[in-house]
Length: 461
Image (tube, rainbow, N blue to C red; front, top):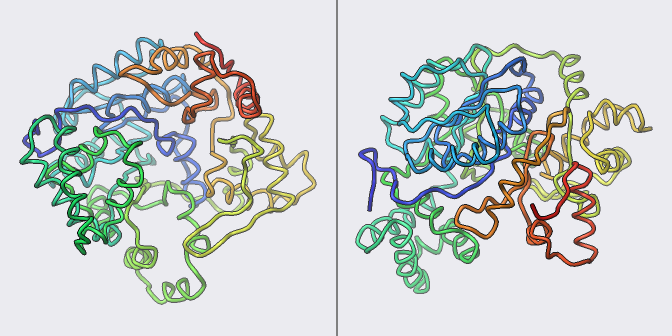
């Protein structure tokens, strides 16, 4: 198994995926709802540490032509793939570097308004985590935002035995890391069938088993076969980043920014007895059994008062990420069922059915109170059905043509760029539309209408 000296799997490439949480509009939204001023957008710079094959970086660059985007990854194959995608899609504002984080710290790079690292921090050795912090310390602007996702305790505690056993067995198997993980999982399944307590208790094992036909072995290899799969408590991560002057802002998992959405009244009362903010967040993770965090931090960010916060939310643009008929006006959370089938929520969905809109524009044509529109916009975002996006629209035909050409091949990218600064997953129906063999039906017509609203013609290129 080819592994770097740092213990990370490098013999198989990571999956091609788009992560919407890394988009500037999404990170700005987290800052605003947390009362923090986001970075200014005049000529901003954005960097992805551990960019993989560069899908997120390239798509965000394509949909934000005024920004400068950088992707850094230690695997040369990833960077080759990223550069090829950017060239094929005529993305001129994306730059990629094949370098580990220590070497990247010394590169001649701009100061960044956004630095993101998805799925890296708890998969690498402690000294590599230190290199990540050194990079951020050197290259983050004052007022800049940092996104850091990581496996979290206590929720991952039940998965530790499963991961350790899979990795240990995999290291004895033949082949590359994808073949090793496949062989190891078959063996571990036989132990699970015997009701080994530590394996039966693993949510990760259950999730892998449930989706075994959908989850690529390349993903599983990167998830499980590295030598430094070490979940951390939120207090440990916050302590790490405090050493470079970063303060916690909020969560890119939007629902988690609202205590009333994830905690019952008794739990909120119990938490209120803890004065220290970091310790209170740690206790909160115990109450919701947190297993994966998407934390946003800031370097010396300015505070927003209630008036400024309200104004920015109204100035923010939002978009549906599913067809209007599929919108559910209820959200199942750890605190129970949250229902929001009301006039304000339906007014927002009706307005966004015609395309992305600023919330203030929705307010001008709606009879709902502004405060109700704001509250319901936040709930719709927390439910994952509405997404903060860019107000301006940019051409994405060239990027999506590059995506279409890759469908069904080894470099397939199952996402379509939207002109409003994000991308959506390609369903089977959309894939058929792009290939020109979708036929005619309600689902096909609904997707055609959805894409047309975004100016996308779903026809073969």
